[in-house]
Length: 114
Length: 114
Figure 1 (cartoon, each protein chain N blue to C red):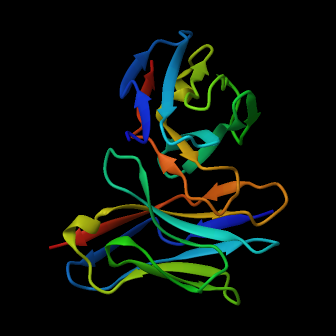
Figure 2: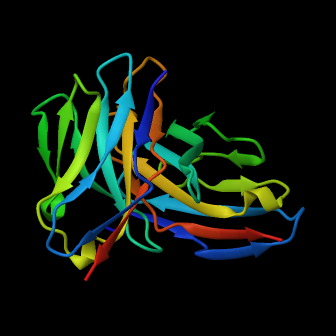
């Protein structure tokens, strides 16, 4: 069975400092991995996705994530946080097994301190 | 191109009432799904459809029905509302079922059952 764990439910960083949101996954097969962002009272929007091409994936708004198979991780990073990055972020794994399930992590809420 | 639309945005029901949450997409996507979002739980799949006339159950289907008579529309019916169904409901679509495709989310329906 596949699963996804977001290691922090809340992360606080100061504006202008780096962001790291951690995601670990479990999958028996080669997964596809996604990060979505949800701003308050909005739907989810795709930030980036990994589908077995380059292991370093660049997304929108300066975010990127690196797929590390040996560590079963897909952490999301950004060099310099902006106030508009305050939102909830979801790591998603799919396609990793024959059941074709899409599994959402429980989310990490990112707070940006002025 | 409106993407994925959901109505209503907010709804309050009494226990035992029934209602239908509407979802429509204008991108000619084959795959559509319904999720519920509860605090600290991430998104959980209720039902999904891989094309007109085909639906299947997700992780938490009890108390909900769906149908897919057209490619565009995928309504979710609550048969007899219960307080446990208080949640935010999201409809999503993607071009087809292949799990490397990103999902496009609607803005959500906030449902309260008293």
